[in-house]
Each structure stands twice: as C-alpha cells, then as structure tokens.
Image (cartoon, rainbow over all chains, first blue to last red; front, top):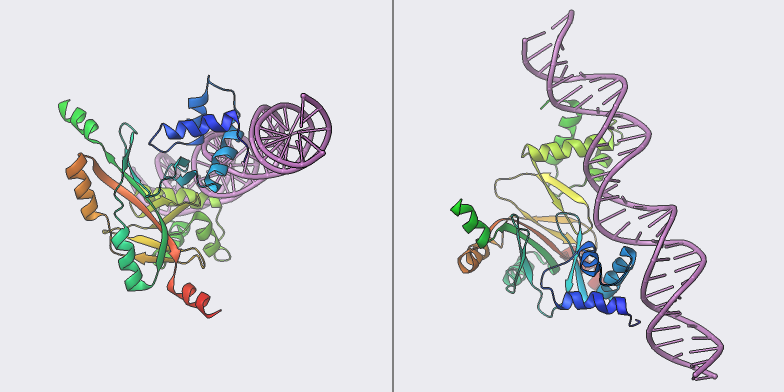
Length: 129
Length: 129
DNA sequence: ATATTAAATGCAAATAATTTGCATTTAAAA
DNA sequence: TTTTAAATGCAAATTATTTGCATTTAATAT
C-alpha cells in the first residue's frame, strides 16, 4: 500500500476516536481540512480492513461502522437518546462460546454485539425534568 | 389490521420456520403458491413488526431478517459454510447487562447478537476429506 | 535525478435492499 | 348493500455503497 496524505489523515482520525465511525462521519471530520471524495474514503476504509488496521461492523441502522482493530476486541454501548457510543473492554461471550461448543459442537469464530439503551447522563437529565 | 389471504400466508411461513427470514426468503417460499408483490411483503413484514408479531434484525450482510416474536428472545448460530441458522434459547447477556448497569449506570434495553462459525456437520465433513 | 509502473483518486454511473406515491382493489363496518 | 379505510401492485425514489475509467501520484528501478 501507498502512503498518501489522505490515507494518513483518515488513519489519524481513528487514532483519536474511540467510537466506531461511518464513512460519512469520516467525511465530515475531513471537511474543510482536505478535499477528498467519498468513494475514496470507502475504498480506503475497506482496504484498511483488509490490512487489519480497522474492523468493519454493520449496525441496525444498516450502516457500516469502522474502528481501529485492537488485540482484544471491544463492544459498545449505544445511547438511544444522545447517540453517544461508549466502549467496554469486557467481552461477555468468552465462556458462552466455549459452552455452546461443548454442547452443540458449533464453533463460534466471530461475533457481533449491539447493545442499546440509555446512558447514565441521559437518565439523570430525564429524572430532573 | 385487515385479514387477508396474503397476510395469512406470510404469517403461516413464520409459524413453520424457526430461522430468521429475509423478505426475499418469504417471496421465494410464496413463489408458485400465491402471486404477491415484493413491496407488499416488505409492507406486511414491517407492519407485523409494529404489531409485535415479528421482530426485525439487521445482520452483517446488510439484510433485514424477520422472525416470530417470542416471550423470551432467542439468538442464532450462523454457519459460514452451509449458511444454516441454528436457534439457541439461552441468552448470555442477562447477568452482563446487570453488571454493566451497576458499574456504569448505562441501562441496556435491547441487544442484538450475531454469532458466526462452523457447525458440527460441516466440521465433520471437512475432517473426512 | 528521471523514467517507469502500480496503486490511489475523482467523478459519474451502477448496484442492491428497501421504501414510497398513487391508482386500484378488497375486507370490514355501517 | 353501501361506505370507508386498509391492502395491493407497479413504477419510481431512496440510501449506503461499489465500480469502471481516465487521470494523478507515490514508490521503484534506472
């Protein structure tokens, strides 16, 4: 792969964000900074996934979300109110997958979890009103 | 809501299938039986979700999957080889969600899990060759 | 330093799942 | 049986994403 300004700028964004981003999110962050076509962003993001720099993940809104690939994968808490996405490091499926394997012989190789609800701040705000 | 032949036929399909179906899956099952437009299928499926007869769920292939709504929700094991979808009744997130709530105050109200891997049959087949 | 080559980019057009507007039909209520 | 609101078919719109192609650019060999 070739080192370009655009590629670096995109990668920088992920280095400074913990929550998953769509191609459009990336485009918005680059707006005003550098001119870049949305198709290029898509191509770059997908390539970075192939190179194992990022991971892609389709959420219930039918959009692809990208984020930095980490050794130990993380999951996310998505607040339905303020749309903020919180990272959690614990994976609740370790044991479960082992269990399933023992019981059924089905070997789970990868999983996606989407957790939605109301974050603490929003709940506090709600209770005040 | 109005009782129609088409609606009933669609609902019947779900009563006799355990795995989640796309609108196209439904269309294929109805092909030859009754003439029905794909748009009608989509509208019916969505309405049935509003009526809490079905639940919709977007998977990593970016398609919407529908299935019968049950009291206790189920999860699925998707075989990457034979594409069969297996139902599992256990939900691995009960405790976890409680835990998250206690630690962070984030109240998880709904979750989606997609579990992919290789089913027992496919693994056996593989080992034979 | 320069020429060469393969990858990256921009742009417009294609794709694919799903939705929607509108005219027509049909089930249920009056 | 008439009335009315919901259901249906069809074509066209929508939305996120991909792709073909011409052009530019970074990395490589000379």
